Length: 123
Image (cartoon, rainbow, N blue to C red):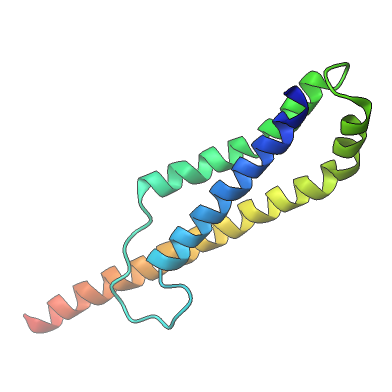
């Protein structure tokens, strides 16, 4: 059971990261031209991003915790072989999350500014 723990934690982190990216793409309208009406980045999404970044560390911590004798030798070799590529995927997903969060926040700021300028224009 311990053999699959790092892989399971890594898969959970990848799914969480992809969900955060999809949420930002949809709420921020990042796949279409800016037309206004973009909501701010919500606190739950921000907290989920931090949780995703922390969860990205847990597979590697679990591996180092059980590496001395908790794994079958073949499983240990698998984790050693694919440790760096999996870390690169996690880091890339975290960076994509940051970019999506930034772009959504920027569009939300533009939407808010457009709304304020339209209100000022009407007065």
